[in-house]
Length: 349
Ligand code: SAH
Image (cartoon, rainbow, N blue to C red; front, side, top):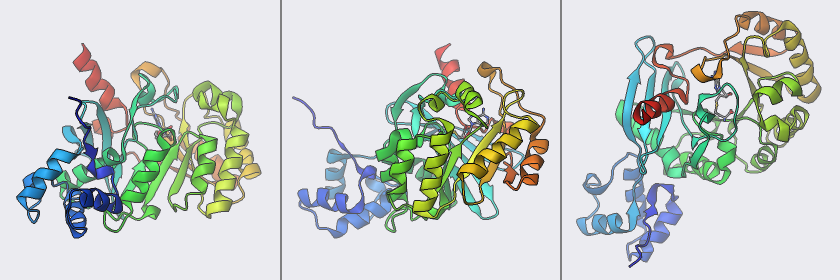
């Protein structure tokens, strides 16, 4: 007898859950009750106002895919928490909880692994295993809130994976996470970071979602970018920046550019001059560049630039808004992809 696969309940929106409960002859109002438990991370007998008979039905028909905390590292320097989460099939992903004055931020993963192949990034070294479901993205926030007892008010999709390479699930996640019946995190408090899938940036511009889009640029010309980011062979820098300008025109939302400084690759003063003129040519709103000192990853043999401030000052002198990203959790290997790899290597050996 073939078993009917269970429905991933947390990937449903309230309307869809109402529909499923109607099929089980349950009244509509139950959906709201069940939903309010799910977003707290509660299931089964924890759902106290749900009658036993309904809880049993729910467990037969649905599965609740909440990631489990497999490992947790807390920074002694700033309280940053790095989580290694285990998913329903045993795969692992990472998330990072950071405290800022304006609230708590969670950096979440969108895929198990990544297939973009950026040369400096630990997440992509072993390729992509699979996409995360909307519930697995939501689940990272729910589990972190449950574990810390604190509310997360900001989300950045800068963990493992390329969000726009898992487009439909990410869009559904964005609608779910911002819904009033759900976690109710405002879209203006959510950043999506992409290595630059031009077609998907164009699609995203039409979704009517006022998120912040960050683009991992990391280079001032095609030669440098293609050498460190294979995606540039498909979507060259000019096409990418045109899409960014189009995104701004359509949504009114400014894009910020991530630029990881790698010694002897992209960190010269001449490079800063070229970057400034490139951005001025294509981006009509004042572009913001977020400089990231490279986190050295053992296998990549690339080193961090010592010229971070020189590069920043050059950009500013040329009228480009530039900041250096504050480094949190440096004692706990907080940049994404490194912990999952380390744990996998230990398990495999
Ligand atoms: N795939 C998405 C989101 C994940 S990476 C993207 O490319 O934007 C989040 C950010 O960290 C990106 O800007 C990425 O380029 C950067 N990053 C990856 N590895 C890094 C490393 N070793 N040091 C510093 N930044 C890194």
